[in-house]
Each structure stands twice: as structure tokens, then as C-alpha cells.
Length: 457
Ligand code: ARG
Image (tube, rainbow, N blue to C red; front, side, top):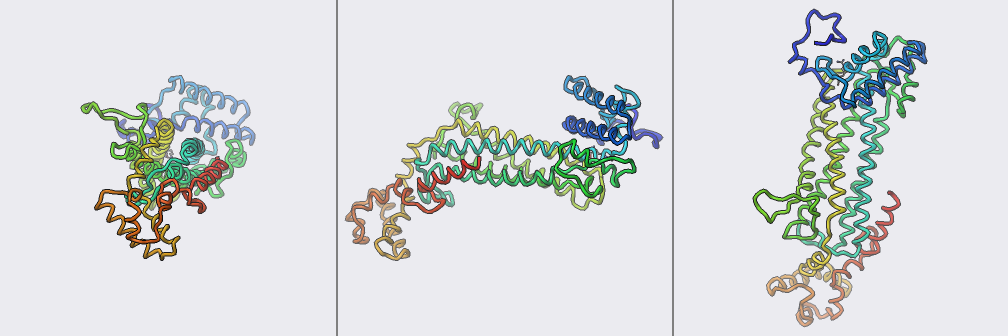
């Protein structure tokens, strides 16, 4: 067993299975880059403040860089009995450069150290998530650009409602992601704060310079209160919230992809490279990627709940419960990044079955509202028009027809104001082009929407 960094007041050590329960090294080794970055900034500041000698700081910094290299060369032995990444690195440093390595922890605690690492890690990954969100938005925009004139049935209650543009439909996800991006961007100011120098909880008597380490680490601001610095996990909750909501959006889109790719809908065909087969049914091509993304919302939402419950009722300042903040966050970040990448690949390679979509809006009653509007234009009150069209639809259902197949005499038997121009009026493409209201599904309005979206990207 390795000697504990805190072993002085102990007469015996925990057994290895107790160490194993206590340890976080198997997951917080993820923080090695941030840990070393934080330590280098701390050592630099200690030397600048004459708390340690310049040559001591140089030795420490070189030692830390060598440890980082050893880690990536698989030459760094990590031990559970050394608990976490912080104590493992410190131990390796002392082994490498001798007792001077023990000076690194002057004026610092693992409490502000781990908080610093987590702030750096979260900031970096949130920025990467924003880039991936934007990349998916671009993919949506490219598809939308090609499909302003592709008509599909729009649904409410999963029943055909009114014909809409395919571009208009998928642009909805662009705007959801735009709000997600804005939430992630906004959260950065609450992540980008330096806790370093708060030490265990109360600050330190050493003449450290917290503003200098803030600057060296590129943090936008620093905590005003040392207890808050080591106890704040709000930014982790907020990141998990933002991840969860973005995943909810992806799951809604995934559900549509799954439905669109069914034999019943056939609105899209997924690329073979983003589908899988069945071990027993040779004909199957399953939308596993979309289903997995839909399913992974369970994990990300779970991590959010878990973090909230872990923090509930936690007194100030640091408590070991907080070690539980890591695995959920790491997994949520991993999950959303994977989901965003897969989503982009899946939609850029899918085929949109334009003809099939066009056919569906000719074999439904999604133009029924148009017929009512046609009657309104002939000065019939909307409520009355609604009633008339309802009766015509019923006649169609009973006679196996759609509105474009109803003979003119039949129409006129319901209302003599219906004339032969009704057929043009009811064509799905004209249902769209008459929609000129701002933000509507009309081709011109969708083109405008796409132009506005392009300005944002
Ligand atoms: N592994 C710990 C964590 O993740 C680091 C901080 C430990 N601090 C302490 N006082 N035990 O939270």
C-alpha cells in the first residue's frame, strides 16, 4: 500500500476494499489535463509571489509535464489507495522530483483543486458541445434549403392536419437547437469562474494571488467567497439541464425519423451506414441509431436528477458527496456528443422521398381547411363553412374519394358558390403558396426563415 498523503494522524490504514469504495481515480483520471494545467498555474503564481523559489517552480512544472506525458504513454501507474487524480499526480511528482514536489500543495486544498479541474473541464466540453450543435444545425439548414418545395402532411395528434413544407418541418429542430445553443452559451459565464485559492474552505494565510491564477487559467471571473468556490456545483446542474433538454429535442427528432422510415410512412430512407439488421429476420433494416438517441435521454435525465438529489440538503462547505458529481457529468457529455455526431451523419445521408411525400398529401384530407377558407372567401361565415366541408368530407369517406376528386355538381349540391377554380385552390402546393403570413409554411415565408437562420450560423 502506498503511503497516504494525509497519513500523519492515522495509526492504521483502511483495507484495500475500503480504499476501493473511497477512490475516484477510475473516473477522475479524465481530469488529468485540467489537473496539470491547474497545478502549473498554481506553481507559477507561488513562485511569482515568492512563496516558493523560481527554480523549485520550474522543477515542479517540468515534473508535471513529464507526468502528463507518462500518462498518455501508459507509463503512469495510478493507484486506488491514492484515491484520486490529485493525490496520484502529487505522489508521482514527489517520486519524480523529490520532496520539493511537496511544495506544490502550499495554499491549496484538493477542494479548490477539484473544483478548478471541473470548471475547466466543463467549460471546454460545453464549448465543444456548442460546436457540435451548430454543426447539426448546418446539416438541417442544408436539407431545408433543398426541400422548400417538398410537401408533406403536417400532423396534430399524429393525424394528418394540413400540408406543410418539409423544410418548414425540419427547420423547427433548427430553432430548438438554436435555443439550446443560446442556453449553453449563456451558461458559460457561470462555469467560467475560478475557485482556485479558496483552499479547503476559508482561503489561506499564504500571500497567494487568486487573480493571477484566474488569468493564467483563462477564467472570466473568480469566486468572491471561498466557501461558495468549493461548494458550488450549480454549473454542473445547469450543464446537465442543458444537456438533458437538448437530448429531449434530439429524441423528438429521432422519433420522427423512426416514424418516417417505417414501411407505413416511407417518407425517408435511412442510409445503410446508419442502420442495422436483424439476426433472424433477413428483410429488416432498423433505425437503431435514432432509437438509441431516443433512449439515451433516460441516462442524461437520470444524471440531472441524481445531481440535484446529491446536492439537496448538503451543508457547507466541501463534502465527499460531491465526488458523485463526476461520473454523471462525464457520461452525459459523452452521450450528447455521440448523439449529436450520429444525428448529423444520419440526417445528411438519409434520402427524402419527395414523390412519396407528395403522393401522401394527395391521398388525405389535409386540404380540408383550405376548402373552408375557399368558402369564407365567398363570404360564408367560417363556422358555417366548417360544417359544409365536414359534410363533404363525410361524403368522400363514404364514397372513397378525396377532395380533389369530388365532381363539381357534387360540390355545388353542398353550396352553389363553389366553382371550378376550387380544384386549383385545393392543390397542396397552392395551400402552401397562399400562406404568406410571417413564419408560416408558405414557400416564400420558409425561404425568408432559412435566410434568417443562415445569418445566425
Ligand atoms: N476526489 C475528491 C472529489 O472528487 C477530491 C476532493 C477531495 N477532498 C477531500 N477533502 N476529501 O470530490
